[in-house]
Length: 272
Image (cartoon, rainbow, N blue to C red; front, side, top):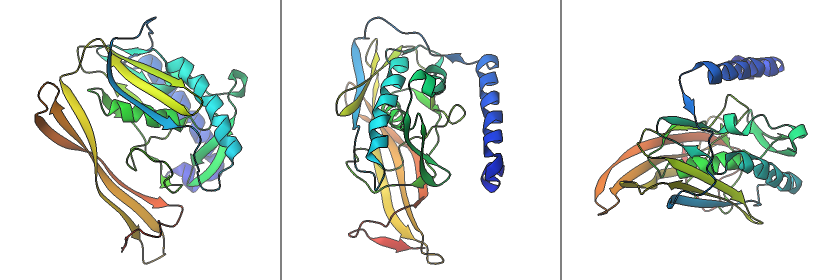
């Protein structure tokens, strides 16, 4: 257990220290950060995805979800059309900056320290979720990604496997990826009336295609205290673009976390 979790009153001080450390790293480390935009879209769509803006999240205040849309639009303006050139690293927070009321961000839903709460800029995790899912379908290497510490809400309109989402907290809980290839990639993201949408584009096609596979999904109940947990494993399968020939697969994630709701009535629940 971290010091901040053990002593909640000093958590803000710990956060300030970590934020300062990250800002220093941005200036002093050897990474080349993506930040350039093009006035045109690169010609080849490598992967596209969308996620619903407003969906049922337990008893969460619907107002916070509507506010989230405002926050996502502001963040999308800072990310849209950014290119990730060979050798560069994409950092969500370096591009978006601190979400503050002065910049127009409003109170949205947050998941923190095992609780559902709210705060300025809340809801930007949906942007991280979208980007992470798209990165997994490209040769870009995810170098920094944090899991949610708990499963807060029952599935409602889920289109990607449990456990593939990403959490954020300015600026040290970030989403980053590195471009190890010799080609340039471009992120396009935008908000419609109903969806957050995104594409990863490039100057040419990629030699491999990627398919994300979920295995061993299960719900578990701990006999000692009656708490419920959810688990699965996420694999990525690689196939040659031109022929579809299998090139192997890799384990990406081995997920296990506490649930804050009862498993679905029809679910088979294992006892641990």
